Length: 404
Image 1: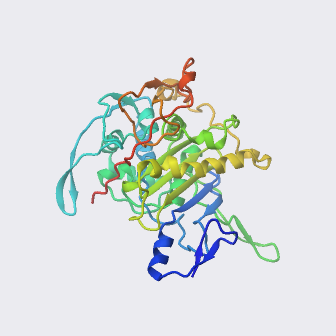
Image 2: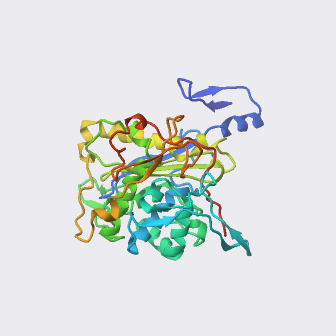
Image 3: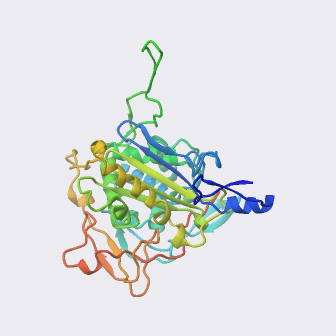
């Protein structure tokens, strides 16, 4: 049999192998999808459907999978639509609710990735950055799940969404293309463009027989889009903090943001990285949902999907041919927006035994130290000792339990 192989010069090896063993061999590979889109135009600049087209023809960019915490973007966007701001606070605490599961009423209690609660008021900017499930679910109930569904669809999600409480944690299947496209909406100041793969078609005489639309629609108000931009950039002091290490610290003229996502049992790892002029997203997982990473340390979105986006953005932004992608979001153009709404700092748990952030939720293990960070994600002056440390990985994924 001819089998795919990373190390071979040709990309393939030939082995005498049984049918069952060949299946075992092929199913051990992890798969990836990647997309990059310009927010202002919807133009798709990169599309990688999987590892190798000759071997795996199923396009992972359009595959339907649970998005985990990347879906929280829509929860927080709807909150901004309803007048809530990133510096408003909510309590990170245990709570439960009655939900319908396969026709029966059951009690559902959302948990954070590490199973712990701080029982304290935290800013939404901090909760988004640290991907705290309890706050997202509570906010989803406060804003209304139906409203969140509508906002997600307005921003570019095409898939059907189940309006259940667990939707706030990404329980409904979506695909990578629509998720990256939806993340473009706040980066384009609230204007939504459908993905454009072909911009123009001309016949042999130069007559235009097709031209992609250039006008977008104002899916969310500018005010909401600006505040969501601040939330995404705030993620750089939380679960997305590793992005800078892959992009390169020498790229200082561009604003970065992002959101991680991990589904139950570490089956799906997501990361969507944002800049003002280019948004990219990666999904990593097995060919089937039953194939997953062994541990949360291996399977979190910031461990598997984030580096893909980081290396891509780093390559693009260091290429002189792509100077147009260097940009910052800038100051608000709406007079009603002021620093007190979005300029609050967050918190990082800073243990001394880790070099990476391994959880999509707040970790409060014994011995961890809380360091307040500024609104731009920088550590306060004098904290140079902890400047390169980030929270310790754990082996728990986000609680994205699917409830019907």
